[in-house]
Length: 614
Image (cartoon, rainbow, N blue to C red; front, side):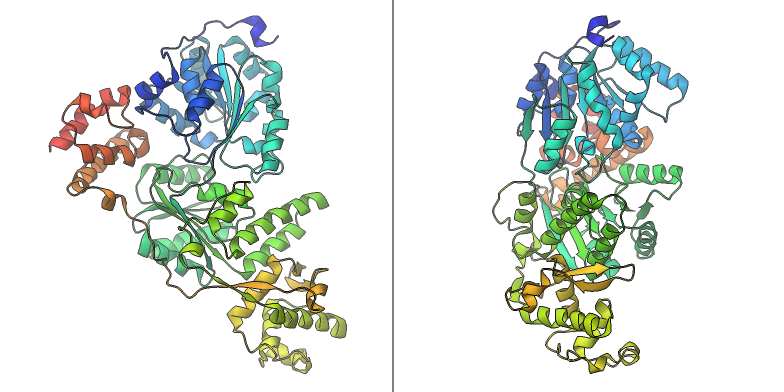
């Protein structure tokens, strides 16, 4: 029997008269950002909402506040079991009655949460989607008073997206089983295609859709030609982010391990994270990253979704992401506090060849492989553009913009050049090898032929007798590899077989016939660091405030360690900077600081005033 026909055992009553009351009293903020107020009111009034908002845009408040204002308990469907404890800790710190039910709890812990739910003692309850397959969970929710359902990370429902989770496909049952309970689905990244699939699969056709700008102006996007990537990464950390928290993404587990060890050997506090590690090691490493300052997490893409650490100053990729959506969400974990941050990617020929091979060898039908190819093509277009990176990135999500002035192509514009003749030379070499000798080779041998090198393999296969041998002396080895990479990106070359041999495509014929020109990107000569670099948090503080800020950070670190919660659960850096600048003398003055709600004022107010007076 549906819940609306049964009625709850006991409904929890709201203690907040309005969304503004909850925002100020609980979270310590005076004003909503962007569409937050309109989204929140839509849900408070009982309507459904589909929200596309960038990481750091304030999505969580869009369901937390309605859950505080409406009667009953807000149920949050989240795939992030490993982070539910931190999410509950953060809410508890501001006085919100929150709990979770998942597989990490024993029977007695689950029973305690169930009792609290049925007694109307919870404002928010977090559930993993797979728990909704359990009949006992449905029965429990039927007996409770539910104020709303929030479907977090809603892009997981989309098989067109970058993070598909089969358990999300069943979430249409929320509307079917509890038709009178409002739903809000939220994601930080979705193309129009993914957006439409979320709407269809979650039965949100009658919902109001809110699409915020995907722009993160505080993030500086940079893509560098891969050349000793570990050393390039180390230079980035030493020159721009010494002592900063950051995330480094690698494609393989082995690369994660090697990169973490390399950083440790070179004086950086780094930790590995991938699915092959023991679950206890993964949990411990994630906990250290969240709770300690200045940790660099080296990880596969298994890490990061839902990470709410606001002071991640950089996200680096040592391998090419599989899609723009994945890249956008991963880089979006930097700079959630709004301070200047870096998104850096090292990208090279082998990345393109590896991704092409992975697509060709992937499971699934031709349509699935075509979809993967489309994702990769869009990512390659972002890497190879001579225009503003941000314009290209936002354009992928259907948003028009103008040059940002804060990405590598704006700060040091690359040149485009007519690479038609070099392309013809390379393609001709491939054609001649295949037609005249029934041979196929990878990029290295092709470049050696074009440069006229005398190597053992050149001699072995008598490639010096080819008509194209030595005709490519106008370009260097690295430049020829750039040509190969860009022809792959433009679909004028394809990768074949496990050894990565190169073959021409249907599109190549027009280039060889002289009917199509080929424009290529030339990397600018520039220093490893752009002219415009970030400013540290300390630099942004007024004269005299920096020592106060550091004393507050030291107090927060001690408090965080004692409580066993991340430092940001106590206060964000932004709040500490405001306190350090304003130096309030009374609790009343401290209560006016952004991010200081009633619960935190009562809990930490006197201690902060003591730090300020020291």
